[in-house]
Image 1 (tube, rainbow, N blue to C red):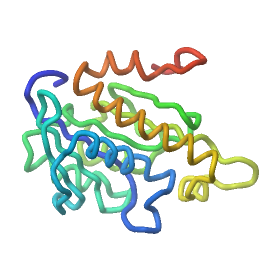
Image 2 (cartoon, rainbow, N blue to C red; image 1 turned 135 degrees about the vertical axis):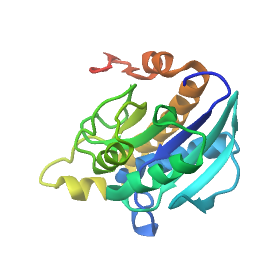
Image 3 (cartoon, helix red, strand yellow; image 1 turned 180 degrees about the vertical axis):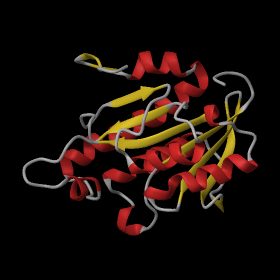
Image 4 (tube, rainbow, N blue to C red; image 1 turned 90 degrees about the horizontal axis):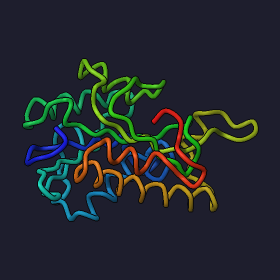
Length: 201
């Protein structure tokens, strides 16, 4: 369901609590918060094992869910939301971090696997399908000797933080574009940068 008056559920993946609040692994949470503020959605409430907001964005009734189950169990919260909301898996839009995409880039897809991301793995397992749109927020790979876990759970340093902030803004814009114009048009717009089309569009 890309157009019309149906409900859409945007799911941002991350970990709850102050320890993780501004880390790269919480890109999904942070992008959803920006989207919700930009579009003046309703106040946050604890529902569906997560933080939930709802409102109108253009022609759509939109819910935004940040599962508070911790990343590896994100699918539990989303499955619960789908039991109560007028939403099918195809009405979801998932937003999450991706080390395989360079920092500063987005990759939008109509469907796909989990790519080794534990939050997406949980979503796909609990929903029984991977056929839903997603926005992958590029955070790049760690430099030097730093391990992957230390990278994703770190708060970005100054220059990295500037790039990260700008990418989160673009992710919020991409969510708006999906709702307004559909996933195909949004892919054509956001899966490019000054270097040309991104691979795997």
